[in-house]
Length: 102
Image (cartoon, rainbow, N blue to C red; front, side):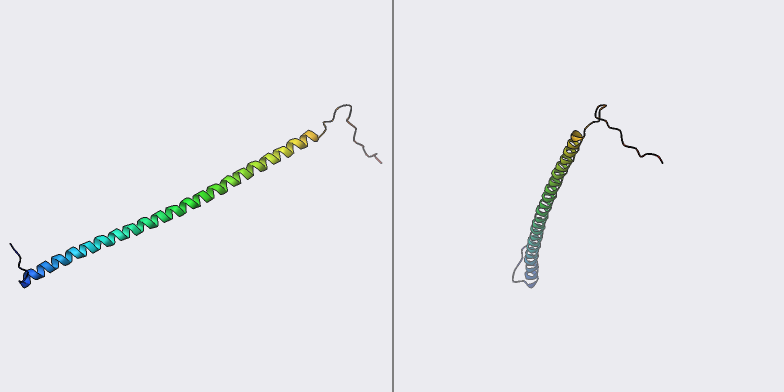
């Protein structure tokens, strides 16, 4: 069957087909643009989350190092204090003075 563009019925049919094709092309382009925008948004969110994760990870490493340094300092003080305390022996031990009873 052939179409005659001069026939009003065929003209309407051809026009509708052309407009359907244009509409389909516009809808596909719109979907493609929406998908690209979603992809960009997802990439941006991923980048921000990665930066936040790295920031938190760095903070936790610093806290861990500070905790280890503090623990080392405390142990150093404990060891130093124990080394400086004289151990009483029989010859250096002095009796504690007692109060006379009344």
